[in-house]
Image (cartoon, rainbow, N blue to C red):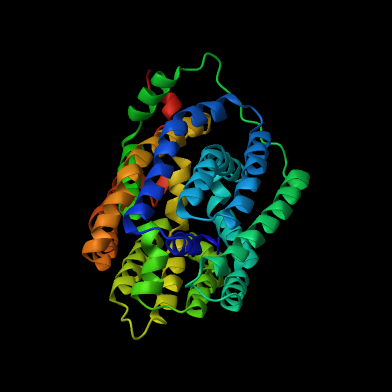
Length: 389
C-alpha cells in the first residue's frame, strides 16, 4: 500500500496536467461502472470464491510490471484500465473471504488483529521506498519512481505464491431459484433503511474522495512541500499506529462499546482532515501527525466497520458490492475531472470539501444509524432474505 501514494506523483512526472490526471481516474471509474454489476453476478454464481480470487490476482500481476515501464501518461492510463478490470473481481472476492472468515461475535477482535498484522507487513516499506526514490533522483523524476513499481511486482508474486499454497477454500451456499439481476437490484433497494443510509454515506464519501484522492500525493509534495523522506515517514505513520493501537482499540470497543468509541474515531477523523488543509508550507512535518490521526481514526472505527459488514446478508454480498461500485463508479467518472478544475482554482478547496463532507454528511448519518437502527452499533435489522419479494 506504500506504493499507492506515489501513483499520482508518478503520473504527474509522466507529463499529465491536473485535467489529465482527472481523466485517468475518471476513465478507471467508467470501466469499473461497466463491469461492476456483471462482476458481482459472476461472484454470486461462483461457489468457491477462493479460486476466483486467485485467478484475478494472477491476471493482475503483469500490469504491475508494465506500470514500471510506462513511457507516458497515456500508457499509464491503458495499464491502469487493465488493472481496474482485474480489481472488479479481485477486491469484492477478497472482501467476501475476509467477511466469511470471522463470525459476528469475534468480528471486532478479528478486524483488529487483521489490521495489526497487515500494518506490521508494511511498516518498513515506506522509508525503503523513500531511500530508493532519493537514490535514483528524487520525486521530481518519473525514472526515480519506476523502481518501486518493480519492487511491488516482485512482492506481489511472493504474496500470490503464499496465498495459492495457504489460502483455504471458501464455499458460499447459493439460494435455489435465484433472482435475476434486476430483481436482485430491486431487492437491495427495498432493503432495510440502514443499508440505504450506508449507501448514501458511501456515495457522498466516494464523490469527495474521487475529486481529491488523485491529487493527494501532489498536494502533499508540491503544495505542502513534503520532501521524499517526509513522504516516507507519512507512509510509516499509518502502519505504526495500526501496530500499536489496533488490538488496544478492539479491547476499548469491547469495554466501552462501538457507539462511544466510533464517535470518538469520527471526531479524530475530522481533526485529521482539518490538519491536512491547515498544515503550513513551512512545517510539512505536520503531515506525519495528520496521517497518524487518520490511522487512529481507522482503529477506533473498527466497531462501526463491523456493523457495516454485518447488515449485508452473505448470499447477496456480491450484488451489493456490484451495485455500490456502479453508483460510486458513475460519480467517479466525473468527480476526478471536476477535481482537476477545482485544483486549478485552488488546491485547498478540494481538501476543505473532505472536511465538510465528513463533518456535515457522514457524521449525522453515523449518528442516525447508531442511535436509531442499532444496539450500541450492533445490527438489529432484518436480513434482506427475510424481506418480502
